Length: 180
Image (cartoon, rainbow, N blue to C red; front, side, top):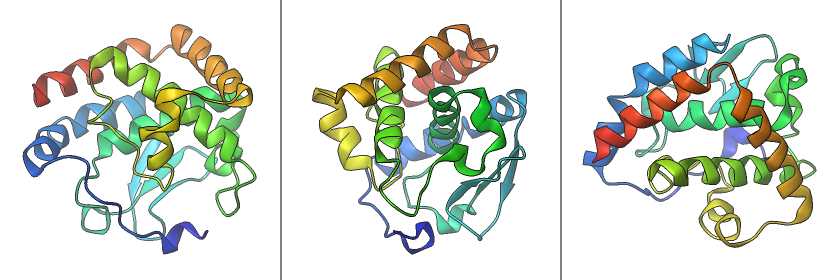
């Protein structure tokens, strides 16, 4: 599937919750920058990492109604953790987004993201915006195949020693407070 042809996904949060999460977006942008990345808002793609430090996210008016920079940035940083530092120099973290050949790695990121968000009570708030949302909401919550678990565990091990973990936890705490 061409990422530019994606269809809007049914909202997962009400407008009040989305507004509260959007209020934390500056913390997430700061986290992205602290991790060594730049944010660009452009219409060329929904979300795209160029492999040179720039994370491009579509302007707000082109995102789904319930999308936030918080949830998108979190998901991109989880890809970095699952894929490892070497993926920093690869467009889209080295993932093929035009075919299903890397679906296992996308799903591994979702497994790790779910594990992280459950600790903060945010698993229903910072839900991924991708076409893999259904996986996140069902299969990832119940079980995952061994290849996904292995990659997710590698990402989790990186999270535990990640230099930006403290800043990420501050962003997660602020998001939890915002939606409480």
